[in-house]
Image 1 (cartoon, rainbow, N blue to C red):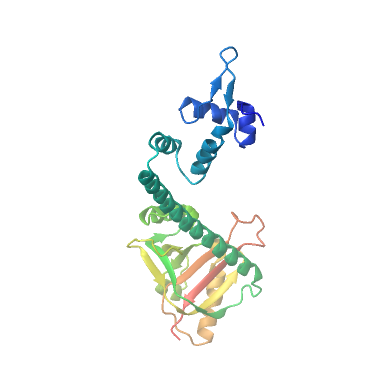
Image 2: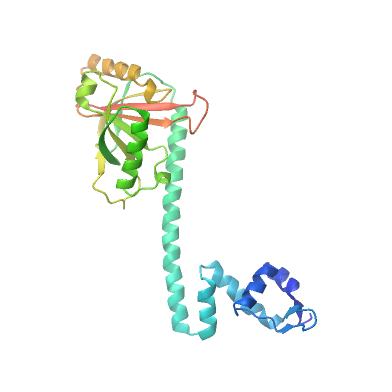
Length: 272
């Protein structure tokens, strides 16, 4: 094999680009062994293969070009080990974050798949529900604009990104208003949370226990009828309400344009 390669040949052999090699030359990271004075062509040697391989490896594991050049300028094993350990810690953090993102994906997938299997729409039932962690903002909400503004306010106060809680937003109606069958005003907005490390004075929970529950096609604007149905079921069975009603739209028009897919759940905690 010849020991002098053009910049194009060098780029092709190492699955990179001529532009990249030109930039490496510009910053003094990988200079050609020869530049033809007549035409400006750059030539490389097989002796430089390992250097380019090392550059690509270090880039792959997260080193910046500045850090790579610094290493090659000094070639100090202690600083190199320190750099590797730093990159390892950064990688561990990235892995942890990706695991969190993956859990969110899986929880949302499970949520939607479970919702699509629900057949008893408009039929009240009793459910045993585990404790659910939330961040909750107590605020009177009686319109869609107020809902959206309150959600942004809650997001900012809890230092949360909207990508965390897609599908996990809900509202509550004060217990006394539920008993009086007044469903026009919510008393709080909440976000269900999955991360254990969210620190905020707004962190709260819905307690474990029995809940009267009903699912229906639609959103908050269709809920009045189903509150009445759920309350009738509670009274008929001699149950007692012990907390605010919880309302969460699981599938809305942002997920599916078909109203046949839309799904909201109302839960009312019971003292039984």
